[in-house]
Length: 114
Image 1 (tube, one colour):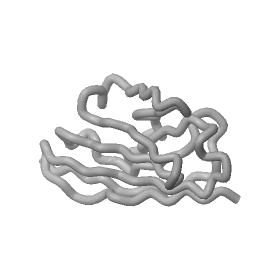
Image 2: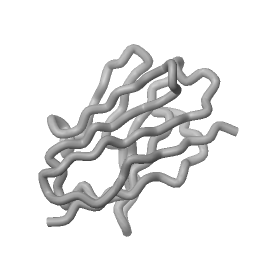
Image 3: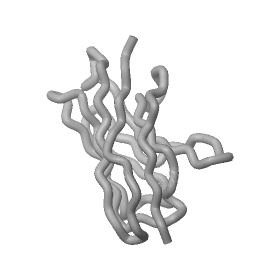
């Protein structure tokens, strides 16, 4: 079973930055598109960014220009650089394949204080 391990979350002030990392024990990691998702309390999980096998990245409107997704196929890792953080970015962040998802990891908590 593929495991997803997210890290890098924390507590930051408005305007601060964090870099999230995700390691996937996926044998064919480089073949897939990967995404970062988030879920705030009482809300549905939502996609915030995704990256294709050829490094084409797309972002949701509410994070475009502030977040950057990247990947390192040699390390089976996906990253999310988050700048200019806002209180509304407070959520648990998860990585997963984009498309057929795997079993979700535990995620990493990001809290942005105002």
